[in-house]
Length: 401
Ligand SMILES: Cc1cc2nc3c(=O)[nH]c(=O)nc-3n(C[C@H](O)[C@H](O)[C@H](O)COP(=O)(O)OP(=O)(O)OC[C@H]3O[C@@H](n4cnc5c(N)ncnc54)[C@H](O)[C@@H]3O)c2cc1C
Image (cartoon, rainbow, N blue to C red; front, top):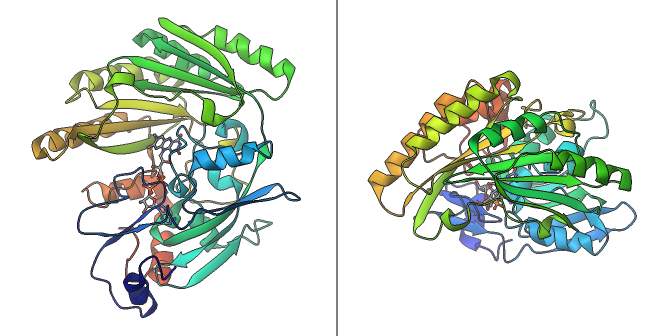
Protein backbone atom coordinates (compact mmCIF):
# COMPACT_ATOMS: atom_id res chain seq x y z
CA UNK A 1 0.00 0.00 0.00
CA UNK A 2 2.83 2.38 0.88
CA UNK A 3 4.13 2.17 -2.65
CA UNK A 4 0.89 3.71 -3.92
CA UNK A 5 1.61 7.01 -2.26
CA UNK A 6 4.05 6.89 0.64
CA UNK A 7 3.61 10.52 1.67
CA UNK A 8 -0.13 10.18 1.99
CA UNK A 9 0.02 6.89 3.91
CA UNK A 10 2.71 8.30 6.17
CA UNK A 11 0.34 11.08 7.19
CA UNK A 12 -2.47 8.54 7.72
CA UNK A 13 -0.19 6.46 9.98
CA UNK A 14 1.04 9.39 12.02
CA UNK A 15 -2.53 10.70 12.24
CA UNK A 16 -1.44 14.12 11.10
CA UNK A 17 -4.02 16.17 9.21
CA UNK A 18 -3.22 15.95 5.50
CA UNK A 19 -4.58 19.43 4.69
CA UNK A 20 -5.02 18.18 1.14
CA UNK A 21 -8.46 16.74 0.33
CA UNK A 22 -8.17 13.40 -1.34
CA UNK A 23 -10.36 11.17 -3.49
CA UNK A 24 -10.49 7.42 -4.06
CA UNK A 25 -10.95 6.02 -7.53
CA UNK A 26 -11.86 2.39 -8.23
CA UNK A 27 -13.83 2.23 -11.49
CA UNK A 28 -13.28 5.96 -11.93
CA UNK A 29 -16.70 6.58 -13.52
CA UNK A 30 -18.04 9.33 -11.19
CA UNK A 31 -17.30 13.04 -10.96
CA UNK A 32 -15.65 12.42 -7.55
CA UNK A 33 -13.08 9.95 -8.90
CA UNK A 34 -10.73 12.82 -9.82
CA UNK A 35 -10.59 16.59 -9.34
CA UNK A 36 -8.01 19.36 -9.59
CA UNK A 37 -5.90 20.06 -6.49
CA UNK A 38 -6.78 16.72 -4.83
CA UNK A 39 -4.77 13.65 -4.01
CA UNK A 40 -6.17 10.79 -6.09
CA UNK A 41 -5.75 7.29 -4.73
CA UNK A 42 -6.28 5.35 -7.97
CA UNK A 43 -6.70 1.66 -7.12
CA UNK A 44 -7.09 0.47 -10.70
CA UNK A 45 -3.47 -0.45 -11.38
CA UNK A 46 -2.27 -2.20 -8.22
CA UNK A 47 -5.49 -3.81 -6.99
CA UNK A 48 -6.28 -6.22 -9.78
CA UNK A 49 -6.31 -9.60 -7.98
CA UNK A 50 -9.30 -11.85 -8.42
CA UNK A 51 -9.67 -15.43 -7.20
CA UNK A 52 -12.42 -18.04 -6.97
CA UNK A 53 -13.12 -20.43 -4.10
CA UNK A 54 -14.47 -23.56 -5.81
CA UNK A 55 -15.87 -25.08 -2.62
CA UNK A 56 -17.79 -22.06 -1.45
CA UNK A 57 -18.43 -20.70 -4.96
CA UNK A 58 -17.30 -17.29 -3.74
CA UNK A 59 -15.12 -14.79 -5.52
CA UNK A 60 -12.61 -12.42 -3.93
CA UNK A 61 -11.77 -9.22 -5.77
CA UNK A 62 -9.46 -6.31 -5.10
CA UNK A 63 -10.64 -2.75 -5.53
CA UNK A 64 -9.21 -2.21 -9.02
CA UNK A 65 -11.30 -4.97 -10.66
CA UNK A 66 -14.24 -3.58 -12.60
CA UNK A 67 -17.63 -5.26 -12.93
CA UNK A 68 -17.05 -6.25 -16.57
CA UNK A 69 -13.84 -8.05 -15.58
CA UNK A 70 -15.62 -9.72 -12.66
CA UNK A 71 -18.38 -10.93 -14.97
CA UNK A 72 -15.92 -12.31 -17.58
CA UNK A 73 -13.87 -14.05 -14.88
CA UNK A 74 -16.94 -15.72 -13.36
CA UNK A 75 -18.18 -16.82 -16.78
CA UNK A 76 -15.19 -19.18 -16.97
CA UNK A 77 -16.52 -20.86 -13.82
CA UNK A 78 -20.11 -20.84 -15.17
CA UNK A 79 -21.02 -18.40 -12.39
CA UNK A 80 -22.31 -14.85 -12.40
CA UNK A 81 -22.74 -11.74 -10.24
CA UNK A 82 -25.52 -9.11 -10.39
CA UNK A 83 -23.46 -6.34 -11.99
CA UNK A 84 -25.12 -3.07 -13.01
CA UNK A 85 -25.89 -1.61 -16.40
CA UNK A 86 -22.23 -0.95 -17.16
CA UNK A 87 -19.19 -3.21 -16.83
CA UNK A 88 -16.99 -0.10 -16.48
CA UNK A 89 -18.02 0.65 -12.89
CA UNK A 90 -15.82 -0.78 -10.17
CA UNK A 91 -15.77 -1.11 -6.38
CA UNK A 92 -17.90 2.06 -6.15
CA UNK A 93 -20.80 0.06 -7.66
CA UNK A 94 -20.50 -2.61 -4.94
CA UNK A 95 -20.02 -0.20 -2.06
CA UNK A 96 -22.93 2.12 -2.86
CA UNK A 97 -25.54 -0.65 -2.97
CA UNK A 98 -25.31 -1.96 -6.49
CA UNK A 99 -28.66 -2.10 -8.29
CA UNK A 100 -28.50 -4.69 -11.05
CA UNK A 101 -31.16 -5.43 -13.69
CA UNK A 102 -31.05 -8.86 -11.99
CA UNK A 103 -31.48 -7.44 -8.47
CA UNK A 104 -35.23 -8.10 -8.36
CA UNK A 105 -34.38 -11.80 -8.41
CA UNK A 106 -31.04 -11.73 -6.61
CA UNK A 107 -30.88 -8.74 -4.29
CA UNK A 108 -28.46 -5.84 -4.35
CA UNK A 109 -24.69 -6.14 -4.81
CA UNK A 110 -24.18 -5.39 -1.08
CA UNK A 111 -26.38 -8.38 -0.26
CA UNK A 112 -23.72 -10.64 -1.83
CA UNK A 113 -20.79 -9.35 0.28
CA UNK A 114 -19.33 -12.01 2.61
CA UNK A 115 -16.16 -10.22 3.78
CA UNK A 116 -14.76 -6.69 3.57
CA UNK A 117 -11.15 -5.64 4.03
CA UNK A 118 -9.70 -2.18 4.09
CA UNK A 119 -8.45 0.77 6.14
CA UNK A 120 -10.65 3.09 8.17
CA UNK A 121 -10.07 6.78 7.63
CA UNK A 122 -7.98 6.78 10.86
CA UNK A 123 -5.52 4.43 9.14
CA UNK A 124 -6.43 1.27 11.11
CA UNK A 125 -6.75 -1.90 9.09
CA UNK A 126 -9.95 -3.98 9.29
CA UNK A 127 -11.30 -7.29 8.02
CA UNK A 128 -14.98 -7.85 8.83
CA UNK A 129 -17.00 -10.99 8.05
CA UNK A 130 -20.68 -11.06 7.21
CA UNK A 131 -22.62 -11.76 10.42
CA UNK A 132 -24.33 -15.17 10.36
CA UNK A 133 -27.33 -14.01 12.39
CA UNK A 134 -29.06 -10.72 13.16
CA UNK A 135 -27.69 -10.92 16.71
CA UNK A 136 -24.11 -11.09 15.41
CA UNK A 137 -24.62 -8.01 13.26
CA UNK A 138 -22.62 -4.91 14.14
CA UNK A 139 -23.09 -1.22 13.36
CA UNK A 140 -19.77 -1.40 11.49
CA UNK A 141 -21.06 -4.12 9.15
CA UNK A 142 -24.30 -2.21 8.54
CA UNK A 143 -22.31 0.97 7.84
CA UNK A 144 -19.87 -0.71 5.46
CA UNK A 145 -22.73 -2.21 3.40
CA UNK A 146 -23.86 0.94 1.64
CA UNK A 147 -21.92 3.76 3.34
CA UNK A 148 -18.32 2.45 3.27
CA UNK A 149 -17.13 5.22 0.96
CA UNK A 150 -17.59 7.74 3.82
CA UNK A 151 -15.64 5.71 6.36
CA UNK A 152 -12.58 4.12 4.81
CA UNK A 153 -10.72 2.73 1.84
CA UNK A 154 -11.93 -0.71 0.81
CA UNK A 155 -9.19 -2.83 -0.69
CA UNK A 156 -10.85 -6.26 -1.04
CA UNK A 157 -14.26 -7.92 -0.84
CA UNK A 158 -15.42 -11.54 -0.94
CA UNK A 159 -18.72 -12.08 -2.76
CA UNK A 160 -21.33 -14.80 -3.21
CA UNK A 161 -21.86 -15.85 -6.82
CA UNK A 162 -24.81 -17.40 -8.63
CA UNK A 163 -25.15 -19.89 -11.53
CA UNK A 164 -24.61 -18.34 -14.96
CA UNK A 165 -27.97 -18.37 -16.71
CA UNK A 166 -29.02 -17.11 -20.15
CA UNK A 167 -30.60 -13.66 -20.32
CA UNK A 168 -33.45 -12.35 -22.42
CA UNK A 169 -33.15 -8.81 -23.70
CA UNK A 170 -35.92 -6.66 -25.17
CA UNK A 171 -34.95 -3.27 -26.57
CA UNK A 172 -37.16 -0.73 -28.36
CA UNK A 173 -37.87 2.93 -28.95
CA UNK A 174 -41.05 4.17 -27.30
CA UNK A 175 -43.50 7.02 -27.56
CA UNK A 176 -44.41 8.86 -24.40
CA UNK A 177 -47.70 7.00 -23.86
CA UNK A 178 -45.98 3.68 -24.59
CA UNK A 179 -43.50 4.42 -21.80
CA UNK A 180 -46.44 4.93 -19.45
CA UNK A 181 -47.94 1.57 -20.50
CA UNK A 182 -44.58 -0.25 -20.21
CA UNK A 183 -44.02 1.08 -16.67
CA UNK A 184 -47.53 -0.04 -15.79
CA UNK A 185 -46.97 -3.57 -17.10
CA UNK A 186 -43.50 -3.85 -15.51
CA UNK A 187 -44.93 -3.07 -12.08
CA UNK A 188 -46.69 -6.45 -12.10
CA UNK A 189 -43.86 -8.52 -13.58
CA UNK A 190 -42.23 -11.52 -11.86
CA UNK A 191 -38.89 -10.88 -10.14
CA UNK A 192 -36.87 -12.42 -12.95
CA UNK A 193 -37.72 -9.52 -15.30
CA UNK A 194 -36.82 -5.83 -14.98
CA UNK A 195 -37.45 -2.69 -17.01
CA UNK A 196 -35.12 0.27 -17.58
CA UNK A 197 -35.56 3.32 -19.76
CA UNK A 198 -33.73 6.45 -20.81
CA UNK A 199 -35.50 9.63 -21.92
CA UNK A 200 -33.53 12.24 -23.88
CA UNK A 201 -34.25 13.30 -27.46
CA UNK A 202 -36.05 9.94 -27.79
CA UNK A 203 -37.15 7.30 -25.33
CA UNK A 204 -35.21 4.06 -25.43
CA UNK A 205 -36.10 1.12 -23.20
CA UNK A 206 -34.45 -2.13 -22.22
CA UNK A 207 -36.11 -5.06 -20.43
CA UNK A 208 -33.83 -7.78 -19.10
CA UNK A 209 -34.94 -11.21 -17.92
CA UNK A 210 -33.08 -14.12 -16.39
CA UNK A 211 -34.09 -17.54 -17.74
CA UNK A 212 -34.10 -20.06 -14.91
CA UNK A 213 -35.66 -22.93 -16.93
CA UNK A 214 -37.36 -23.60 -20.29
CA UNK A 215 -40.82 -22.95 -18.87
CA UNK A 216 -39.58 -19.57 -17.64
CA UNK A 217 -38.40 -18.63 -21.10
CA UNK A 218 -41.82 -18.82 -22.71
CA UNK A 219 -43.45 -16.98 -19.79
CA UNK A 220 -40.91 -14.14 -20.08
CA UNK A 221 -41.14 -13.94 -23.88
CA UNK A 222 -44.89 -13.77 -23.58
CA UNK A 223 -44.62 -10.79 -21.20
CA UNK A 224 -42.06 -9.04 -23.41
CA UNK A 225 -44.24 -9.47 -26.48
CA UNK A 226 -47.07 -7.63 -24.72
CA UNK A 227 -44.96 -4.47 -24.35
CA UNK A 228 -45.88 -1.68 -26.77
CA UNK A 229 -43.15 -0.03 -28.88
CA UNK A 230 -42.89 2.45 -31.73
CA UNK A 231 -39.88 1.05 -33.60
CA UNK A 232 -36.70 -1.06 -33.56
CA UNK A 233 -37.99 -3.74 -31.22
CA UNK A 234 -35.42 -6.50 -30.77
CA UNK A 235 -35.84 -9.56 -28.55
CA UNK A 236 -32.59 -11.46 -28.13
CA UNK A 237 -30.94 -14.05 -25.93
CA UNK A 238 -27.49 -13.42 -24.37
CA UNK A 239 -25.10 -15.55 -22.37
CA UNK A 240 -24.09 -12.91 -19.77
CA UNK A 241 -24.47 -9.29 -18.64
CA UNK A 242 -21.35 -8.18 -20.52
CA UNK A 243 -22.96 -9.03 -23.87
CA UNK A 244 -26.12 -6.97 -23.34
CA UNK A 245 -26.67 -3.78 -25.37
CA UNK A 246 -26.06 -0.49 -23.48
CA UNK A 247 -28.85 1.67 -22.15
CA UNK A 248 -27.75 4.86 -23.88
CA UNK A 249 -28.98 7.72 -26.02
CA UNK A 250 -26.80 6.74 -28.97
CA UNK A 251 -25.68 9.86 -30.81
CA UNK A 252 -26.66 12.17 -27.93
CA UNK A 253 -24.60 10.46 -25.29
CA UNK A 254 -22.01 12.46 -23.35
CA UNK A 255 -18.62 12.95 -24.88
CA UNK A 256 -15.35 14.42 -23.65
CA UNK A 257 -16.46 18.01 -24.20
CA UNK A 258 -19.30 17.68 -21.69
CA UNK A 259 -19.10 17.38 -17.93
CA UNK A 260 -21.98 16.02 -15.86
CA UNK A 261 -23.43 15.23 -12.46
CA UNK A 262 -25.86 12.42 -11.74
CA UNK A 263 -28.47 12.33 -8.99
CA UNK A 264 -30.15 8.98 -8.22
CA UNK A 265 -33.61 8.94 -6.61
CA UNK A 266 -35.56 6.05 -5.10
CA UNK A 267 -39.28 5.57 -4.72
CA UNK A 268 -42.24 3.17 -4.78
CA UNK A 269 -44.31 1.88 -7.72
CA UNK A 270 -46.09 4.63 -9.63
CA UNK A 271 -49.39 2.71 -9.94
CA UNK A 272 -52.26 5.21 -10.01
CA UNK A 273 -49.75 8.10 -10.11
CA UNK A 274 -48.38 6.80 -13.44
CA UNK A 275 -49.96 9.49 -15.67
CA UNK A 276 -49.12 12.30 -13.24
CA UNK A 277 -45.46 11.25 -12.93
CA UNK A 278 -45.11 10.90 -16.68
CA UNK A 279 -46.64 14.35 -17.21
CA UNK A 280 -44.12 15.84 -14.73
CA UNK A 281 -41.29 14.07 -16.54
CA UNK A 282 -42.48 15.41 -19.89
CA UNK A 283 -42.59 18.98 -18.52
CA UNK A 284 -39.10 18.61 -17.05
CA UNK A 285 -37.71 17.23 -20.29
CA UNK A 286 -39.24 20.15 -22.21
CA UNK A 287 -37.31 22.50 -19.93
CA UNK A 288 -33.95 20.73 -19.98
CA UNK A 289 -31.16 23.21 -20.67
CA UNK A 290 -29.45 21.18 -23.42
CA UNK A 291 -29.69 17.91 -25.30
CA UNK A 292 -27.12 16.08 -23.17
CA UNK A 293 -29.38 16.28 -20.11
CA UNK A 294 -31.64 13.30 -19.60
CA UNK A 295 -33.67 11.29 -17.11
CA UNK A 296 -33.48 7.50 -16.93
CA UNK A 297 -34.70 4.82 -14.58
CA UNK A 298 -34.15 1.26 -13.49
CA UNK A 299 -36.48 -1.11 -11.67
CA UNK A 300 -36.04 -2.67 -8.24
CA UNK A 301 -38.45 -4.67 -6.09
CA UNK A 302 -38.65 -8.39 -5.41
CA UNK A 303 -35.59 -9.56 -3.49
CA UNK A 304 -34.20 -6.03 -3.18
CA UNK A 305 -36.96 -5.65 -0.56
CA UNK A 306 -35.36 -8.35 1.58
CA UNK A 307 -33.87 -7.04 4.73
CA UNK A 308 -32.68 -10.17 6.51
CA UNK A 309 -29.45 -8.40 7.48
CA UNK A 310 -29.41 -4.69 8.07
CA UNK A 311 -27.49 -2.53 5.60
CA UNK A 312 -27.16 1.19 4.98
CA UNK A 313 -29.36 0.87 1.87
CA UNK A 314 -32.48 1.75 3.84
CA UNK A 315 -34.90 2.25 0.93
CA UNK A 316 -35.65 -1.44 0.65
CA UNK A 317 -39.20 -0.78 -0.49
CA UNK A 318 -38.12 1.17 -3.58
CA UNK A 319 -39.43 -0.01 -6.96
CA UNK A 320 -37.95 2.64 -9.27
CA UNK A 321 -34.61 4.38 -9.29
CA UNK A 322 -34.90 7.32 -11.64
CA UNK A 323 -31.63 9.17 -12.16
CA UNK A 324 -31.19 12.70 -13.44
CA UNK A 325 -28.20 13.42 -15.61
CA UNK A 326 -27.30 17.11 -15.75
CA UNK A 327 -24.63 17.85 -18.36
CA UNK A 328 -22.95 21.01 -19.62
CA UNK A 329 -20.19 22.24 -21.90
CA UNK A 330 -16.92 21.55 -20.09
CA UNK A 331 -15.59 24.66 -18.26
CA UNK A 332 -18.69 26.74 -19.12
CA UNK A 333 -19.84 27.94 -15.69
CA UNK A 334 -23.17 29.43 -16.79
CA UNK A 335 -24.09 26.26 -18.68
CA UNK A 336 -23.08 24.27 -15.56
CA UNK A 337 -25.34 26.43 -13.39
CA UNK A 338 -28.29 25.93 -15.74
CA UNK A 339 -27.80 22.15 -15.69
CA UNK A 340 -27.53 22.03 -11.88
CA UNK A 341 -30.61 24.28 -11.51
CA UNK A 342 -32.53 21.92 -13.79
CA UNK A 343 -31.41 18.90 -11.73
CA UNK A 344 -32.65 20.59 -8.56
CA UNK A 345 -35.99 21.36 -10.23
CA UNK A 346 -36.30 17.70 -11.32
CA UNK A 347 -35.56 16.53 -7.78
CA UNK A 348 -38.06 18.97 -6.26
CA UNK A 349 -40.80 17.91 -8.69
CA UNK A 350 -40.21 14.18 -8.37
CA UNK A 351 -39.67 14.08 -4.62
CA UNK A 352 -43.31 13.25 -3.85
CA UNK A 353 -42.94 9.92 -5.71
CA UNK A 354 -39.20 9.45 -5.01
CA UNK A 355 -38.53 10.38 -1.38
CA UNK A 356 -35.23 8.49 -1.25
CA UNK A 357 -31.80 9.06 -2.73
CA UNK A 358 -29.37 6.42 -4.01
CA UNK A 359 -25.89 7.75 -3.29
CA UNK A 360 -24.30 6.00 -6.24
CA UNK A 361 -22.73 9.38 -6.95
CA UNK A 362 -21.92 11.77 -4.12
CA UNK A 363 -21.75 15.56 -4.32
CA UNK A 364 -19.78 16.94 -1.34
CA UNK A 365 -18.76 19.80 -3.65
CA UNK A 366 -22.40 20.90 -4.18
CA UNK A 367 -24.78 22.69 -1.79
CA UNK A 368 -27.31 19.83 -1.87
CA UNK A 369 -24.92 17.34 -0.21
CA UNK A 370 -26.59 17.63 3.21
CA UNK A 371 -30.02 17.03 1.66
CA UNK A 372 -28.83 14.01 -0.33
CA UNK A 373 -27.29 12.51 2.82
CA UNK A 374 -30.51 12.85 4.82
CA UNK A 375 -32.65 11.52 1.97
CA UNK A 376 -30.31 8.55 1.53
CA UNK A 377 -29.88 7.53 5.17
CA UNK A 378 -32.83 9.18 7.04
CA UNK A 379 -32.83 8.07 10.74
CA UNK A 380 -29.65 6.03 10.27
CA UNK A 381 -27.56 9.15 9.45
CA UNK A 382 -26.83 10.24 13.08
CA UNK A 383 -25.43 6.77 13.91
CA UNK A 384 -23.33 6.84 10.74
CA UNK A 385 -21.98 10.24 11.79
CA UNK A 386 -21.07 8.77 15.21
CA UNK A 387 -19.24 5.87 13.52
CA UNK A 388 -17.42 8.33 11.30
CA UNK A 389 -16.27 10.30 14.35
CA UNK A 390 -14.68 7.07 15.65
CA UNK A 391 -13.26 5.60 12.45
CA UNK A 392 -12.52 8.72 10.42
CA UNK A 393 -12.22 11.52 12.99
CA UNK A 394 -10.21 13.79 10.68
CA UNK A 395 -12.74 13.52 7.84
CA UNK A 396 -10.23 12.15 5.40
CA UNK A 397 -13.01 10.35 3.54
CA UNK A 398 -16.00 12.25 2.01
CA UNK A 399 -18.00 14.25 4.59
CA UNK A 400 -21.18 12.89 6.20
CA UNK A 401 -22.48 16.37 6.99
C1 LIG B 1 -22.49 3.85 -17.34
C2 LIG B 1 -22.92 3.68 -15.89
C3 LIG B 1 -23.90 2.75 -15.55
C4 LIG B 1 -24.27 2.59 -14.21
N1 LIG B 1 -25.21 1.65 -13.90
C5 LIG B 1 -25.52 1.43 -12.60
C6 LIG B 1 -26.43 0.40 -12.23
O1 LIG B 1 -26.96 -0.33 -13.06
N2 LIG B 1 -26.70 0.23 -10.92
C7 LIG B 1 -26.12 1.00 -9.95
O2 LIG B 1 -26.38 0.78 -8.76
N3 LIG B 1 -25.27 1.99 -10.26
C8 LIG B 1 -24.96 2.21 -11.55
N4 LIG B 1 -24.09 3.21 -11.88
C9 LIG B 1 -23.58 4.06 -10.81
C10 LIG B 1 -22.26 3.51 -10.30
O3 LIG B 1 -22.38 2.19 -9.84
C11 LIG B 1 -21.77 4.38 -9.15
O4 LIG B 1 -21.63 5.70 -9.57
C12 LIG B 1 -20.45 3.87 -8.58
O5 LIG B 1 -20.12 4.63 -7.44
C13 LIG B 1 -19.35 3.93 -9.61
O6 LIG B 1 -18.35 3.06 -9.22
P1 LIG B 1 -16.83 3.32 -9.64
O7 LIG B 1 -16.02 2.23 -9.04
O8 LIG B 1 -16.72 3.55 -11.10
O9 LIG B 1 -16.64 4.64 -8.85
P2 LIG B 1 -15.53 5.74 -8.67
O10 LIG B 1 -15.87 6.91 -9.52
O11 LIG B 1 -14.15 5.19 -8.76
O12 LIG B 1 -15.89 6.08 -7.16
C14 LIG B 1 -17.21 6.39 -6.77
C15 LIG B 1 -17.23 6.80 -5.32
O13 LIG B 1 -16.90 5.71 -4.51
C16 LIG B 1 -15.75 5.97 -3.71
N5 LIG B 1 -14.91 4.79 -3.80
C17 LIG B 1 -14.58 4.12 -4.93
N6 LIG B 1 -13.80 3.07 -4.63
C18 LIG B 1 -13.63 3.08 -3.30
C19 LIG B 1 -12.91 2.24 -2.41
N7 LIG B 1 -12.22 1.19 -2.85
N8 LIG B 1 -12.93 2.55 -1.09
C20 LIG B 1 -13.63 3.62 -0.63
N9 LIG B 1 -14.32 4.46 -1.44
C21 LIG B 1 -14.33 4.18 -2.75
C22 LIG B 1 -15.09 7.19 -4.31
O14 LIG B 1 -14.57 8.01 -3.31
C23 LIG B 1 -16.21 7.89 -5.04
O15 LIG B 1 -16.84 8.82 -4.20
C24 LIG B 1 -23.68 3.39 -13.20
C25 LIG B 1 -22.71 4.33 -13.56
C26 LIG B 1 -22.32 4.47 -14.87
C27 LIG B 1 -21.25 5.49 -15.22
